[in-house]
Length: 274
Ligand SMILES: C[S@@+](CC[C@H](N)C(=O)[O-])C[C@H]1O[C@@H](n2cnc3c(N)ncnc32)[C@H](O)[C@@H]1O
Image (cartoon, rainbow, N blue to C red; front, side, top):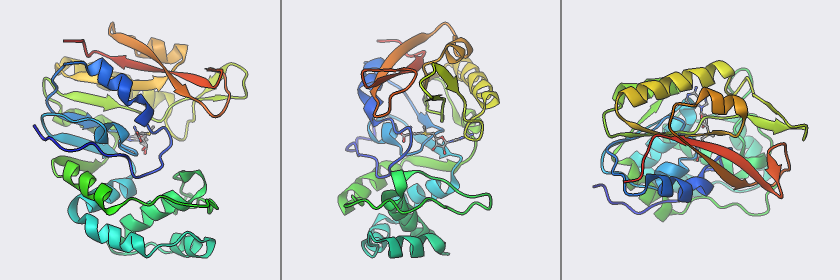
């Protein structure tokens, strides 16, 4: 068993699932899983907050993000040293944003720095793929400490990292493995009870591909845990005779699925309690 200390995510990431960890742990119960797959890695809250007996296969379509994890895995001390040279001022932010370094380690540190100092920590690029999020004017920032990078690096030593579409993850799935799936999903809008898909992020066709992937995971005798929006269309698409759990997330913004500051989300899984 790769026993390593759990770590906190080091990136601010839309849809981060640190809040879901207690539910995931309760769903897993005493079930022993083999390899771990996370094809929508993002801020990696679930990978970093859990541990597994086998290898980890981690991927995301965002190649810059995957490069950050590769650099932390291979040379976290250099990432830290370069981060130390970054300061939280608008001048330095826009200067750093305007230049993409040639060296992967410098690109990784730049990504982490921009993520912490940008407006809302969102990741957005323009049509030519250039990061274009404005400065966040945050009073203080919390760049990762050396020890945190070190422990993430240790966790990643057993991980295979890839920048790719989620569908490819099936290539490595074996019986007894767990696949945690956390796609970008629906957003409630305008308090009118209607849920709209952000076509640019993840279309309905992508949700259908995801549903097919889950069928393949099940045929491979592996486990899946899927997090998704609490919406009837999603319930119907992912109804596979397994378990559907309604989770409650604290919500700063009121919306269609929120009540008293909480928003519902769905968790679908074929993991049974031992
Ligand atoms: C909701 S976030 C995952 C958040 C993560 N669970 C966490 O705790 O931070 C969804 C991720 O899916 C990635 N993504 C979007 N479309 C994808 C695709 N077609 N294949 C793989 N990853 C994709 C995005 O880059 C984003 O990082």
